[in-house]
Length: 264
Image (cartoon, rainbow, N blue to C red; front, side, top):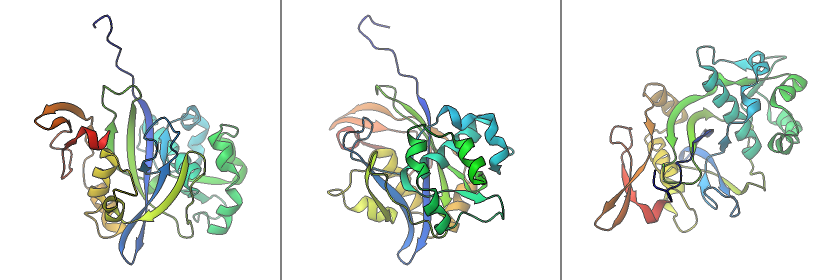
């Protein structure tokens, strides 16, 4: 390493969920607009998610999981983190009431909203909330969709797993007003079409394009279950019109490159 060369940042494990619903105009996904003062993808339209926290791998969580029996401990932590982050950022909760086994209703969900800032500020532990409220995390609703790692040249890097899940009936969704300042249910094409209103970075855009291949939530989940997820780490090449951001050709995306100035 050269004397003035900085070491490559170690990627932080992270997870996000594409929360889906069927609508007259086609499949819709819930997205939030990041606060302009957030230090990562500020102002961008993204899926709810974030870094995996220590509590997401708490051994005590195992008694509150539905599904995930054949997952590794690391993948279960990613699943727990994805559900927790989605709840914090969208108010949508992929959990069942342990007393009767049904998904949390819209009415019950409203009674749980006060936990969002408590979990976000780490003033409440996920396992404690689940125990107190008699809830079970629905890992069985998560379908692995994509796996992206931030390029090696970036000062802050994330090793992010993307999941698909159908949003429970009655869960409307709302941004938290802190990390995100706006939210929307939108078709993939709708999020991609208005570049003046929404900033959509390269990984988000490609995952929206991939989702747009499906006409319904059922189709999207089935396609994801039948497709192997390959890890993607973009890199930069010099092209005739400037620097080009590229990904591997076999990752399952229709687009594999973009001009860097448009996407990072």
